Image (tube, rainbow, N blue to C red; front, side, top):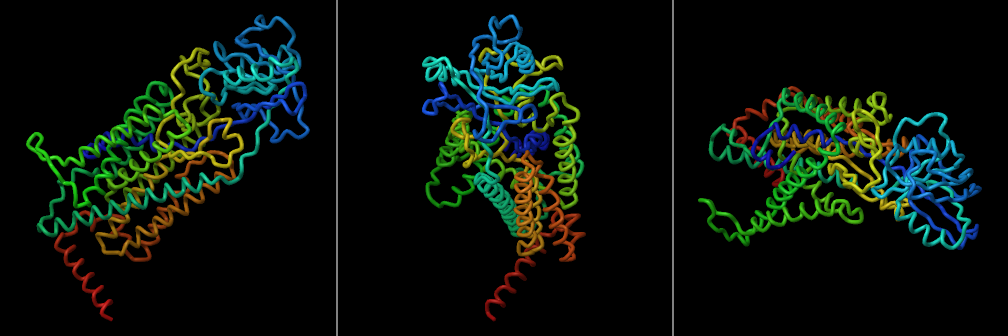
Amino acid sequence: MAAALLREGRPTGALLWGLLLLLPLVSAQEGVLHAVLNDDPRFTRDYCIYYNRNWTSLPSTLNNITYTTLDILTPKLLCSQSEVIYDITDKAVVVMRGNCTFLEKAEIAQRLGAKILLIASETELTIPYGNKSQSLTIPVALIRNEDIIDLKQTLWNFGENVNVTLYSPPVPIFDFSMVILFAIAVFCVTLGGYWSGMAELEKLKALSASGTHDSSNDEENVTLTPLTVVLFVVICCVTLVLMYFFYKWLVYFVIAIFCVASAMSLYNCLSALIRKIPYGRCKFPCFNKFLEVRLLFLAAFCIAFAVVWAVFRNENQWAWILQDILGIAFCVNFIKTLKMPNFKSCVILLGLLLVYDVFFVFITPYLTESGESIMVEVAAGPFESSEKNDGNLVEASSERSASHEKLPVVMKVPRLAFSTAALCFLPFSLLGFGDIVVPGLLIAYCHRFDVQTSSSSVYFIFCTIAYAAGMLITFVSLILMKKGQPALLYLVPCTLITSALVAWYRKEMKKFWEGSSYQVMDPMDFAANEGTSTRANEQRVGQ
């Protein structure tokens, strides 16, 4: 959700952005091409490849492995048998990407007797997808064309017998990047929920001081009613399907929205801190208003920060740091700004999004040609290695085109223990914004309810702990199942059940469910409660 839309109180803009927060973790399928010159272990080279685990099962080590003689056919495309004028039987052949699908190239290579097909790509490496026939048995993998050029220069030109093999080193069961993602997620929901509660406290104190009941001027927040929640989920479904069919155009629109929303969010977060500093409050007149110079410089900094990320977003070595900083600011500001009016709305929102997440991750693979879920394909880019054209799968041209863009709605941390990281440009562990902000809205409601009822943050603390536990369960499931998980499947039950149990134990379920005290509590009653609480604390201190 763009922060500008939030500040203007436009729930429609919030709904349009909501889908993009619900994308799951998607794991790449990387391996290694190991090349040896004349069977001499002193002359070897390793290169990154991408392959489809559903098509090919590669060994995990080089022990007792079979090598195949390499034959480089580039710049041939191998879209017809007539392109090959000599025998390639029992060889590993390299052809260029383009003009026909990966599977068509593989079927031709297999008919000609090849043992391995390597497809050289001048664009970003992606996982090959398609409906593989049972008759296709040879391994198929993508490799960078620049790596083939390097192989020619370092090995091919120094001997005729270059042998190659493919293998996929095992990914460690645990990677420290999960700890970093866990810390980021818990930090965002904790800070966003705490900030939301403190903003509610300040508002109630202001209403108490003025003696009025009117809080309708709260323009910096958007409140989701049950009807709006249902509309939110419907729009999520429609937008996800549109992203699935028109990804290559809409992705740039999403990137532009993310730049605006994250810059505004970063400004809101940092300005809240700067305003606490009692120095540098120099102002100047502008259109009948007075603007602080320091806030003007802050706005310029936040815009520049987002622009730098947009320009260098595909620099995998360091751009992920900028994206995570912008993402943290976005999630914290989102949780603080979007208000759930009661627990009933929270149950409807989280319940429907849980069904939405499970359906688009686990059910839609049975409905798509590629066998991948719509959610995963949108998160990774539809069909990764191909484009849609009139409903048919057509591989992208071998001509260099726009780089394969990813939706910037995830936290990214490099896999620190992955053995092929240096070859494959640092594969990332990913966590979608939705796995942070959706439960974060419930945590924020819990803290606001604590403020309204002077509950000493009991709801906020227990719900935050439940979120942390749910995130741990998500990571354990990810490790055990070795595939991307819809985190809401674990986070929603943990947070909803815990919150309900706390309300039931405290005999406040009706009040917590309907949010009546939150909505209509008299400011004077709030002031009286605050005074009673203060006197009670003073008596305890005196004792």
